[in-house]
Image (cartoon, helix red, strand yellow):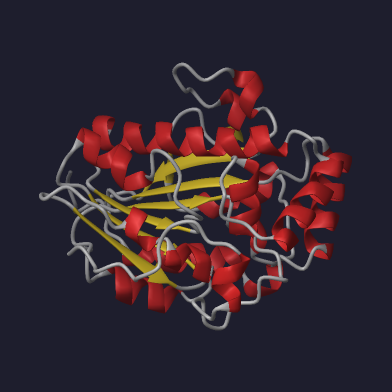
Length: 288
């Protein structure tokens, strides 16, 4: 189905929050989604977001390039899954604010009947849901306001749009490093992948702890100190654990600069972290 988007979409500014349009929202607390929007050149951020984003750029001046590169990486992988692997359903968790070439736009250019569900816990993203809820007549889009840790709410909501008897690509771009070890991110990913059928895919892009280690550690410290969210970069081994029980696609879990992507200079993504794509295998008694 295509949900009816909320009123009040468009550029958000401080006046919107003062007017009470975003209930329960405090613009003085920075948000990873809005900081990311600032780095990619968007307009939907507040003073607190810009201040926190600039402080983080003090540790990693290339963050705007990293953010843009991650978006390009997402576009490339969605295109590959839709065109090369015939995936027609996508669950994009931690989607962030709408930009050019959102997941549904990329997927539906390849297959008009693609169905996409977006998930985020930032109320400003909800206020922009109209841009995420456009769809071809053959396909569908929906939006769920939920935290990644609330997998039950995500899965229950997603079944309103996605058919869980058919393969689903679960997209986790730059979101798992905001889940601390205490919340067991591996169990969260396992619950999601247990709910989708064989032939589904998991896509992860994650901040590294063992590449440019000192710089990334300082970035994580500043992120956590900003009040936006604690950040937990992970090593190659730790990121690879998210794919336990799945069949990794070539070239495996690699620095994003090593991920094959036509027309995208490796220099643009050398800091974007680890990326991997894996397929949920069929049991011996299954075929397909």
